[in-house]
Image 1 (cartoon, helix red, strand yellow):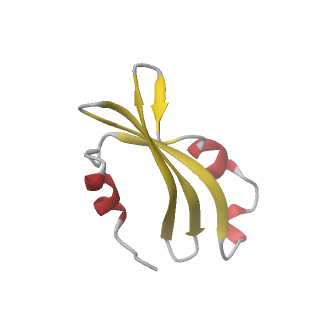
Image 2: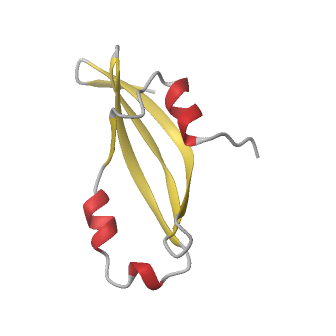
Length: 87
């Protein structure tokens, strides 16, 4: 498996680390008993912005809140341009 840091994924799509949001992050963090789980796994959408518009990164987020670590496995990315997604 080819792995890279999340920062490298953002660089690949020209997204500034300060210019992305995890959609439904508050819903994920509010899940009951989340801190008691060893590993939390869910498919997430990360919206980022670059000079060409919006970029959607879709993938699986694995989190271990007991150890404060997370892994994002990128499944697909799409550049949203003028309201039309381009894969």
